[in-house]
Length: 198
Image: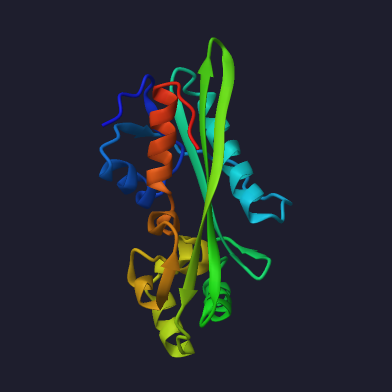
């Protein structure tokens, strides 16, 4: 659907991001960015943009002729940023905090490439509001026991068993999964045609 002028490289090992790119017919390879994700930034939008940029630029060094896509997702509730849980107790604490309440999911995306030897980047983030059912502790523990929450921001996967926790969303569903694919597509299309986007 898009005739990209450069090969696309996904700087992420996330199977969800891989599936979303495949879903819209984009051809790409994967080169996972192995970077330190610890940052002091407290603003979730700025944090995910900074981390996505860090990942994209790290991989671009190995693929200077390609277009590299870096992404990072966090959950934010009441000013607190929630990444992936450290252990099952951490997952339970996160899910208990989110139960019966509304939170935001932020995904930052960076497209990085080189033009005439000069590095270029296009960074943005998308926010989706998610409301959760007030799920009892025993069901949260049963969900955690499946292992699904352990590699996901906010300790749940909306596209998996965690779907039973979600009451509703406002915004882009795929953003909660891990990549706002429609917005990514628009940016790639704009860049391939050298046009602006709003």
